[in-house]
Length: 179
Length: 202
Image 1 (cartoon, one colour):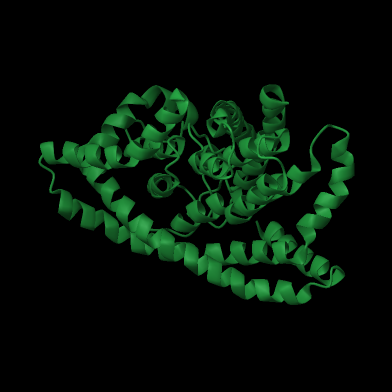
Image 2 (cartoon, helix red, strand yellow):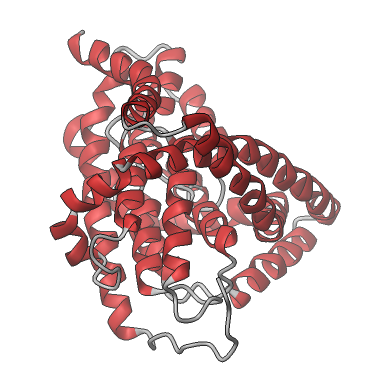
């Protein structure tokens, strides 16, 4: 399978090549690479510690939500509605959780894959949805936390809208390719 | 964010009480804090390494070159950022790392761009338009290769795990473009930022 080989090649080489390119380019331009690295790396400590309060706030809230069973309840309410539009109800928890928590989404995805035939439409739809998802809450928390932004204005709303479009598009596209 | 955070917690407690899972909800507070610290610790290493590499990229002029190449696109998507600013180069590197599925590298690069944007932000506590657009680009999750999902599918014995690449590419490209457009629409609807009274020397 040629696509598979190309994918493997890119996954294998992307990171080493980027590092190699940046370092070699700098050495040619006579940049003291080691000193520059240390200078930049120092910021990493400050930035990471800045993020802690933001991350604790959001992760505690999301952990509480997951523990409360509210996500399952919401899936239960919505699933009756969704059967009508040919949306497999197994997928719903994934659609809900993918914006909130990356590790939870990965767990739900693994569940779907193991509870359904791996080559079924449901598994493939779940894979497309999982592959096209980004944990909106986490991204916002880390990026804004790093520079100390407390008022997100319309950033969260934009992210959630984009997530919703991603979910709808996943269903449409997966239906077209695998349905 | 105030209301959303409040509602997440209130809903958790109400549903915890209804479902008889208050104990689990209470425990989640502690497991949540633990998880947050674990994530930060992982992030600390990644952040330190990549911000070091990014400093090399910045000093050698790669970031600047990228900024120059992408000037026309940048003017359209980030009109507030002064032209030839290295911020655009940081955004470009963040985008490329995301596209290649290098999430670990993408985050520090995005944060570097955020720091640049924060320097020209008129209110240091609220998100500028450029910041919201950058976040929109990142939450849409544009990806050429969803490596982790392919790995799970392959491990579970899928016949052809790479067949999801093209569908994912279509979905993420579409939501990527939509996210930027939505961000621009909200920018017109939401009240503009006011300069903060406090004077920061940043």
